[in-house]
Image (cartoon, rainbow, N blue to C red; front, side):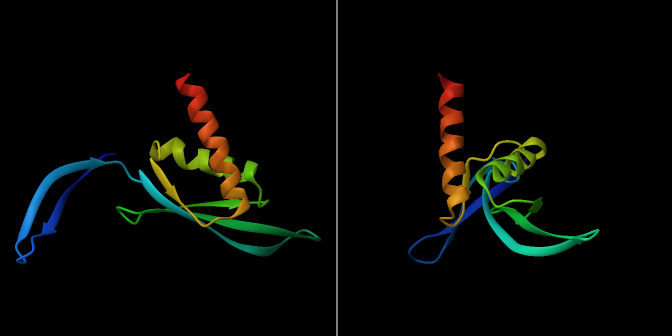
Length: 116
């Protein structure tokens, strides 16, 4: 699914200029954040679960995943679940959490390996 956006900007004297039409796919430029931990009871056990929220910065669409661990591997699996239906992500903004930093290096390595 591709959407078209028309870019607008103002000149110094306040006039509105319409720019070119730009096509983008949802989640092409996204942000992510982790929510939790949430304590969930399963039978007699208490589990820690985390919510991972991806937000499209152009259309404000939201994609949510549930993580059972706050590690790089679980984040990468959730990221694959985002990319599968929505297509590639050009830029992903996040805070400097260790799982995000580790995932960024893994994704960069994967992208370099694809091109070589």
